[in-house]
Image 1 (cartoon, rainbow, N blue to C red):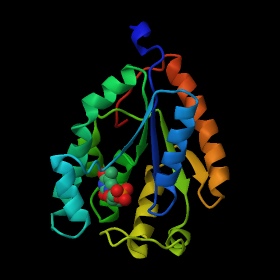
Image 2: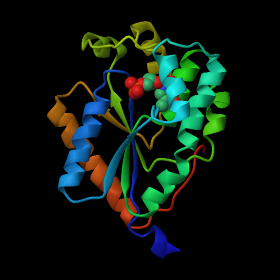
Image 3: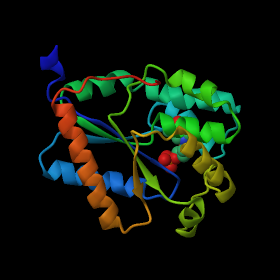
Image 4: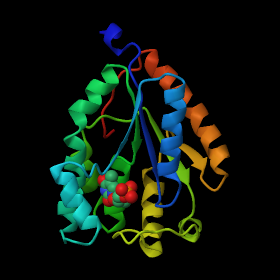
Length: 212
Ligand code: 2DT
């Protein structure tokens, strides 16, 4: 039993507002860990490649309309369809870097006015991350970076609400990194935090599930 969890991979989640630099940092982290010879994969949610993911993608592109509850459950289903693969990867020693997870699910849907507890319920039983890094930037600063695409949620007024929702979700276990620092400084901090977490997991930290 303890043998199995020995040297398992780490489940690392990056969260933050649109334009916080999350996706670039995920890519940089992936290259760094690969160069060090670690088994590592970069995943993202929504995973637009599955059937459910395609429904989500067309919703985000404003090509379809769905009830707020219905789309929330699709985002959750999109994580559930990857759950068993996620667990087997981690058990086999692969570290997963995940660009958005259940916290995005709850932050974005509750920003629309859905009840937080209702939003959390379908996430219960998914694997809990070993590390959540929040790349912290104000919605105003993020908007100044430009490059909001045309997707449904990429508007300053809505991002302000999402920022509030993230604040209520954030707990003492989250690592907050100042996303307004230079790319290099953010990267440096991220590497340190991630290496610490990977070491803990290698030593046999048990898996746990959302949502406690
Ligand atoms: P990107 O593909 O640009 O990251 O944005 N979202 C994401 C939700 O509303 N619920 C979720 O569960 C997840 C994972 C955040 C996708 C958009 O979808 C939002 C931005």
